[in-house]
Structures are given as structure tokens and as C-alpha cells.
Image (cartoon, rainbow over all chains, first blue to last red; front, side, top):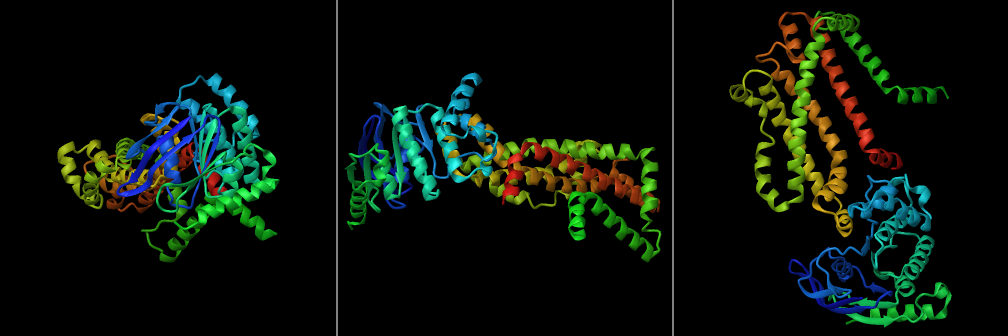
Length: 244
Length: 258
């Protein structure tokens, strides 16, 4: 689904992403994990078409990524919701921008809000919501455009443990149900192991990939209670901590 | 218990409370100083209503008209240029040195120039207020656009928004609360400027009315004029409050939750 070849992204003279090559399969989930400042968010913004590469290529479904792609949904760290719009107005924004008919918007978004269990919040403003609820609205907005690729930038980092796990379960079932690929960035090892079919471990400072792990147990809701889960977490931790 | 009730009463009737306190203070000054230059509040209020039946309303409308026209022109120009400069840093680099030089100049000193260029009538007065508050609105708008959360821009771009939609869904609603603050400050400024400008080459306007009463040593009428200009200001402020409540519901909710 995604081919990244020798990708290099720079901010001025600073190289945030350094010659990264990576393939991500159709209907899979890819976790990119690494400490702050390792270039993982920049890589994600590159995939979203928000940041332009200095060199190298990104192809999504054989098409080069130039700017934002119609079927790519993006969820940002602080949810990226607009405080002046209600839950409903936030959720329909993607479709409204695409000039979809009001009737179709109504049907699509009502269904999604129902699925995410936030329909009764539709007239509230973001400031009236809890962190978990805001995140659900952000997910609803991203899903409304019926994406085949969902990008998430540290989506659950501001949430408490219980809410975080509930939302991780939700994202997992959405991924399986909607047949879409997910690429997400995190610094949380458990999250990467639970939600990542492919776990990409980034180097501390170089802006490059250190190691990639295939997670065979991906997709099992009860994986968290499995011994294998802890072993995989340990493995990721060990790789992350090995000095270069 | 009684204290709480009193407290609640004050909170619910801030306007009445403020008016009563000011009238009492005014009355104390009037009583202590025993001079014609501070007439009693009751006398002034009676005079105000008497004058309303004559031409005071006309003076008030003349002033209101000048403030509104100047306000609308400054808003249209200040907001559009401010938004543009806020989003286009490179162009702002060329403009901001000039803005910083022109902003603090006491533009009121240019009234004679404006009167020669735009005539003695309404236009020169409106122009004067416009060039003063235009800068306040321009600078506020530009700076609040620059301070917007970067994530919002990522968010709207990832949804595929056009330039127009970026303004419609993100930039305009985001700067609105700060814009309302700028408008409030501008209204205060424009009333002060107007008071000065209306002393030249006009026989209508509340500024003229007050100064004219002064030169005729009619202090009761002068105070009635001051009362009128205060009420005019209050009226405009209340209008802005109402508009803000309607357009920026989220800001009010945000204040309540903090």
C-alpha cells in the first residue's frame, strides 16, 4: 500500500528524516516508535502530504504523494478539533470541504457518531468534552471521509490508562471492520505492541530506522493479557535502549 | 445568608449597582463642592430628558453615525489586511516596519491636513477616526493569526481545505474573540477622538454639544451631554456584547469551565 524510498525531510539545515525506506502492506497497521525528536512525527506528516520531502519518494497505492490525499485521514496529537465548532460541525468538516450533499453528510456522520457512541454529544463544544470524548470526535472526523489510510500522531498520549486502552480496542476493531491501513506514531511501547502489526523502531537522533519487528499476534483483543505481549514489549524496549 | 443574597443581587444587577454607586458619588461631590460646575445628578437627568425632546438625539445620532461608518471601514480594511499579513510572513516583513512607525503617531494631529484634503464636513472626521482605529484592528488581527495553533493548520490541510475554506473554517472564527476585544478598545478610542474632532467646523455631534454648553457656561446642559455620550458608549458596548455572545458561544463556555 505504501512505499517509502530514501525519504529525506529537512527543516532548514536540520535533517529530521534521514534516508528512510519502508513498505507498509494493505490493511495492516504500522507502529512507528521512538523518543521525542527522532523524526517520527515528521515522517507521518510526510505521509499526510503536509510536509514536503527534500528528496526521495512516497507512493501510496502507486500514486506519488504530493499534497493531501483524498482518502487519507489524519488524527493529531491534541486532536486538532476546532473549539469554535460543535462536535457535529467538527465531525462533518471533512465532508463539507469536499462539497458532499447535506443529506449524505447527515447519513454518514450520524452512523459514525453512533458507532463511536458520541451521537448524544453532537451539540456540545470541544471544551465541554473529556479527553477521551475529544479523541472519539477526532476519530469520527477522520472516518467520515471513508479513508483507506488512517494516520495518527501520538493519538492517545494525553489520556489516562483506562481510556487509552478502550480507545486502542476501538481503533483495532475499526481497522478490522473498515479494511483500512493504519500508520501511527507513539512513544508508548505497550501501545506499539498492541496496535502495531509492523513495529518500526526509530533511531534516537539520526532520523533513521533502527529495527523493524513483525508482530504475529496483532489483532487479538486479549493480547494484552498474554505472556507473549510482555516478551515483545521487552524486546522492543531492549532494541530501543541499545546504544548506537 | 443575607450576605449571600446581597452578593447574588449585585452579580445579577451589576448595571443597576454601578449606576447607583456613581450617582451617589456624584451627589457627594456636588454637595461637598457646592459649585455650579458640578450640578446635581437629579437636575442633570431632568435636563437630559428635556433636551432629548429637543435636539440632543440629533447630536447623538450624528456622533453614532461617524463612529459606525469609521468602525465599519476600519474593520473591513484592518481585518482583511491583518489576516493577509498574518498568513504571509514574507510580505509582512516588508510591511511591519512601516506599521510600527505609523502606529504610535498621534494621528489626531493630522486633523488640519484631513480637513484640507477631505473638507470640513463629516468625511474628515470619519477619516480621522478610521486612520486611528484601523491600526488597532490591523495589528490585533495580524498578531492573533500569527499566534494560532499550528496543529489547526495541519488539521484543516489534511481535510483538503482550499484557501477560502481555510479562512472560513479556521482563521476567521479563530481570531473573532480577539477581534471583539480590539473593537471594544477601538470604540473607546473613537469616542475620545470624536469629542476632539467635533469641536471643529460642525454644529452637530455630541462633542460639539458638550463644548458648546461649556462656552455658554451652561454646566447642567454640559453634564447632560456627558451623560448622553456615556449612554451612547454603553449602547455600543452592549451591542458588541450581544454580537459576541451570539458569534463566540465557545469562548463563553471556555471561560465558564476554567
